[in-house]
Length: 205
Image 1 (cartoon, rainbow, N blue to C red):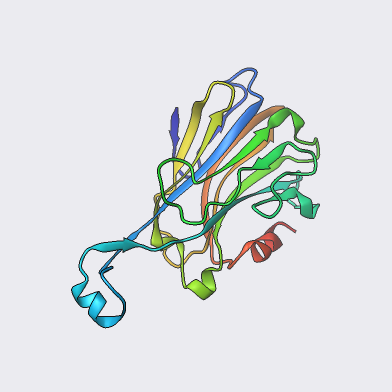
Image 2: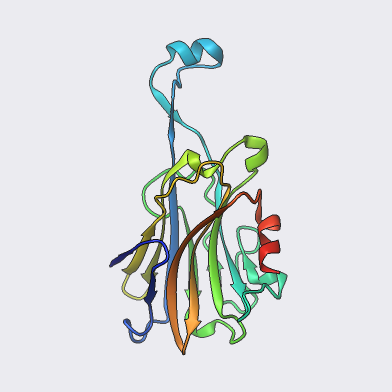
């Protein structure tokens, strides 16, 4: 397994001959806030301890053409559209809190079935209803994206998103893309203040 730094790339298929099905896992944990003993001022002063705030992060994947454009609405796979039209990309479903070990959300990709006009699979995470809830990625920790060979469950690479993402509401975590007949993975780690998928999508139109 290879730990990547921001901006690094790895060749997935050349170094793993026969690789056809991958799982892209994304995970995160809510940061604990101090003073979870009760409501209001007294609870904050005398409650002690700590609590975690439920933050509903959603993982999605944009299936883009050679120009980095989203040419079909259905080529955005997320909790509301769990399978791409071609069936090559499938979303595991929504995790509402981010609690627990391991991946919080998983996206399965059958590389051989990805249509020829799709060149990039860009994996993003955004915070649901972030404006109303006044939440941002400075309130989570241990965010990561990893790629696993489904056939033998081998983790091929992992990218820990360890930068400070204070006041950022969307992470463009990484991408799987075609290059000279091979599939590669790039660790992106970019962040934006887009409040949701609809706004983020405009970057790819």
